Structures are given as C-alpha cells and as structure tokens.
Image (cartoon, rainbow, N blue to C red; front, side, top):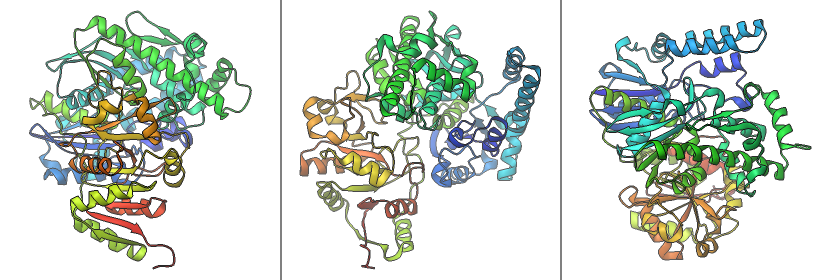
Length: 598
C-alpha cells in the first residue's frame, strides 16, 4: 500500500494576501505553510522533504510539486500507483457552519459581516473543499486524484500522529497546541493502543489560541509572526520572571478547571491596530517598542504566560489520564524552554517532541494516520534524515561550477575527521554537509554550521559574519549522548536528539563552553548517538581528543531568511556568500581562494 501525505496550496499566499492582508510581516500567516511531501510504502516511511529545501522559498505554502517529484522518485512509484493521498486539513461542512455562525454572531455592522462571509466563501470554494484540493493538484501535476483516494485528516490529529509515530507508538498522554487548526487551537487527551481519546471540555478554540497570542506578541515586538517566535523565547532569557507583575496573566488569561483557558482580549487580537494599542496599555509603553529592556520584559511576560498556561493543562492531564509518558506537538511545541519545564514539573516519566513538531510534521502525520486507518500501521521512523542525498559526483559537478573560486582536497573519512577537528581548535566556522537532508526546522548534523564553543565571542562571529541575524541569538551545543549527563543537568531526559528540550549547563562546563550557553545558563542541546549519525559522532570524538571540549556548536547551514541548504550547489553558494571559513561536502574539505589568487 502506498500513501502520500502532502501539504500546501498553489493560491494560499495570494488569497490570504488579498482577502486578509497577509503580506509583509504577516506573510507566513497563511494555511499550508511549511509545505511538504511524505511517502509511506507498505508501512514504512521511505521519503519526506519540505518544499522549501528544493524551491528555496522559506516556509512556502505552495503546492509542493518539487517535493512530490523527488519523493515519488525516491520511493520508485508514480502518481497512478498511490492508494491514498492524505491531506492534513479537514474543513468539513460542520466546520464551515460553525465559522458562518460565528461571523453572524459577531458584534460588527452588517456590511462588515457580509464582507467577512463573502471572503470566507471565496476561501472555502477556491482553496479548501475536496474539489478545490483535487483541482489544484491536477492543475499542477496533470494527475487528478480520484475522489475516493483523497483523505482529509484533521490537522491536530496529523500533529498527534507525527508525534506518536516518532515516539515509537508508546501509549501516552498528549498536548497538541497550535496557532489554529480547523476550529481549535489546542487539544489534549490520551492515546492507548492507537485509540485516541480527546478531553472535549479541555479543548480550546481559535479565538482563545495561546500560540496566536505568542504570535501577536512576536509581531508587536517587530518580528515576523509564525516564524520568529523563537527570537522572543530567546529574548525572554534576558529578563527575570515577572511573577504577579505579569500583565498577560493578570489582565488577559483565565484558567479553567477542566484544563482549558480563555483570553479576555477576544476580538482585539484579530486586528493589528487594536491589539497594538491594547498591549501598549497593559505593558505601559511610553517609548519605542524596540527598546531593549522593553522587548525583554514583554518577551518574558509572554514566555511566562505560556509556561503557566501549559503547566495548568498538563496538571489536568496528570489527573485525568493514567499514562506515564507525554507527547507534546504543534507549533507551541517548538518552545523548547517550556517543554523541559512541563516534563520536570509533572509526574510523567518522559516527554517526546518530534523533529517535525510544528507544521512540517503534519505531512508525515497525515500519511501515517491514513496508512494506519487503512490497515497498515507505519513502523517507527529511524530518524529525521528522510530527504534527498547526493553522490560524490554531484559534489564534483557543483565544485566544477564554481570554478577557481575554491580549492579542495578529497580525504579518507578518518583523515577528514582528524583534519576538521584540528581546524576547529581555532575560532573558525565550518559548513558541514553530509548524507540526507534532515526533516523539520532544525539542522541535526547533516546540514549544519559547526564551531568551537570554547570561545566566548564565537556567537558574535557566527551571528554577524555568517548568519546575519540578531546578536542576542544563542546557539545549540551538539554532544555525544554518552556525555550529555556529564555536561547538562538533564533531569528525567536521557537524550535530546532533535533539539526540542533546553537544559541547564553544569557550572564547570559553562566556563569551558561559553559559546554554547545562553545568558540564563541553559542550552538547547542535541545529543548524538553513534548509530543515528556515525560521522557526526566520529567528529565529536575526534574534536574532544584534540581539545578536551566535549561538544561543538551546531546551527543550521543557512543565512537569516533563507531555507537550510539542500544540495551541494546550495552549500557552496552559502559558503561563498558568507564568511564561513571552511566547507565539508562529503569527503571534500573546501576552502576559498583568496582574492587575487585565482
């Protein structure tokens, strides 16, 4: 049985821009962002890639035709061979009826209500009906999906299925919290033997979305919503907790006994000018919103609010389920600071957050969900390295295309690892390109930028010279799983392979690896097991033998605003356009030819 999961719409960006003014800062506030394709063949996830890695358009919402072409080719199948096309949105007639009823009840003048209904109807008929989805697919691929082969999977269940799959099908309680799904923003409950039980009285609708509140604060602080929330999370570490002085907890949020919550701002959150003035009022703004101290205080307020609200949700889960493990998925699950606190503050023995916890994961989740529903449960994925890989001949062709701008040596594996480890003794920056493209928003050792964390100023070097991003942004350490407990205070966790948890760095190691430690003494760590990524594990081992330092800095191989590199040509382009010192493409160690030498 062959199942293809896909997410994305040809006209999503255009429609949301025209109907709802989603452009500029709001350009990612559309349906279908993080478009991707995943292919399941006879119960095995054989290929998955995000469209952005191939089209080079970050967070694209376009129908993923490039990803579809690659993934089908990787699986060795054609469109006509596919038994089921799984799509991670299910806008049923009941959903539309509820949307229309909500508009009809809204306290706005009749002309505005009519306008909202007209825009909703255009969005529905152009984008979101099964007929529209099939027509979009046919227009872009030349293949019409038979009506009985298209399966619409509820968005939150797609998130849950991705998390359940990557957690190894363990029974667990779950919390899925997203900006929005079809009607809701958060669900929670329990999954046992594949059967999902949702706690309906703890379900939170879109108008009370905690993730959307975080997104609104992100925009209020001058960042891009649905993209830059991690910047706000990073900023929060520069300010102490606000406690009772938090205006969001005091003025905005009400916790409900059943596990839900309400936001008292209501409709003002839907309009930029209304919520800007509302936030100005509750935060007492008297000057520039980009003032450093003001930004840090507001970031701390919304981070604290997320931690309080989700802790309330998990405390209810503890009482209402008997599960020992917790799955956290959805866009809010990328808040890795919160993930650790949720686990450590609960009775749960472990928590899982997948490598595709935000919307990249719904493509995998939809495919996994549909395959299971059709009687072919999917075996747990071996890891995130599911995308395209390239041959040494591909690397040679890419090198030939840049001519005499680079010089390179091809080395045996042991020689390569030793040579790179020695280079990293100095404060250099190395692009590291190996194997298959990782799936999800994190670079996990195959498309990474690496550096020595022993230098206190290495963060500034990478942020300014390479990534071209804000200097306050921290970097993650990557270290062998066997060493993690020695370096980090990991609590209940034994590993963190996907950078989805944050841990305090032990005091003696804070002095040894200052470049990998955030201002609050923590690190969003990636642990590496020899079996999962032997080449990266070998480099870490060689680096520690040379320097005595047990980890490296690992950040994504890209510059701000661009997708992580995919192909060897992408890697060389990024290398030549930045101040990265060396590039490793497979066995090839590459440096730049100094100006005037060519």
